[in-house]
Length: 152
Image (cartoon, rainbow, N blue to C red; front, side):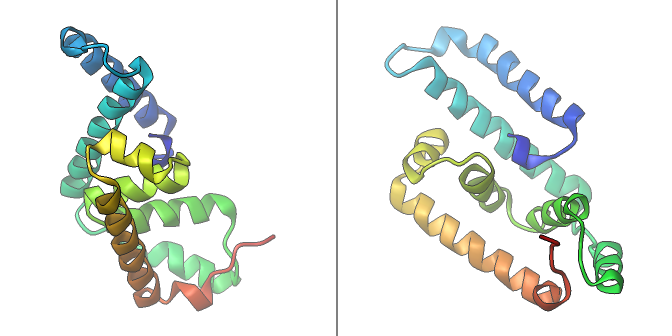
């Protein structure tokens, strides 16, 4: 869930939402799987809802200021890169954003993502592949490939 937003207050709010929903749904927990797996599925639903809400609120995120600053300097510092990455991810659909967040920010395997989202493994692979291609097209359209390089 930390990959959805780097703001600590937003992250804490999302975590709190997970536990509130878990509390109210505790009577539905059947004990067939692990409690952690059940909580992760709830977290995935909360994350998906958050992605949908932020997409509606913010619409198309403008990258102009971030890109101009990076072009002028020739590099981009890690903090600005994080903001830029969040802005790029915000341009994806909530499901695409969620699958990439689970895969790359939370280091979930295909199987773990399938379990959390309720999708089958093939669907997770397909959605991740399509989301990466969409993100690649956005990066190329914004001409970020050639202009921004992170310092090592």
